[in-house]
Length: 167
Image 1 (cartoon, rainbow, N blue to C red):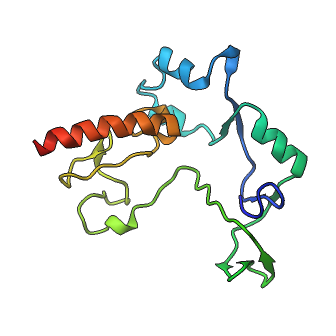
Image 2: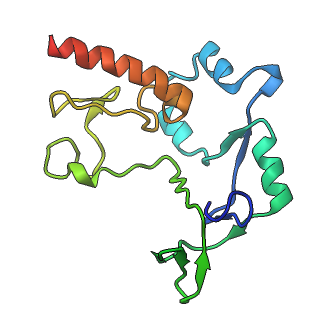
């Protein structure tokens, strides 16, 4: 989304929604206690459309204020963005919600990436570059790895592994 917060929000794709608290418990609680969070179902879950986990607050705000769908703007200007048709729009804030698909072009040539540009790792620890680690990648260690909650757990795990490797 880009534009003033909920003032002129735009997305390239429709926003998908997942309830934050199904059956009265947080979604991550269910994933952890059913062990689905770490189950080897990556291929199955990779086909699930990306959605926003929400308790209703974000969806209500977007429903109230509306969301326009547009292609990506073509350039930044000093006070906004330039659209492909040459139209300039003043914008206060731009938030890139990338859909949890990071790119690692800056690691090209380091040996850290496979032929598709994806990190070569096990649980976030690079298997090809000593001392290199990743956090926040989709299915890094679990279904929740790409969320703040999962990234926190993965970061702690990763730091223990990298620290142990240094000793």
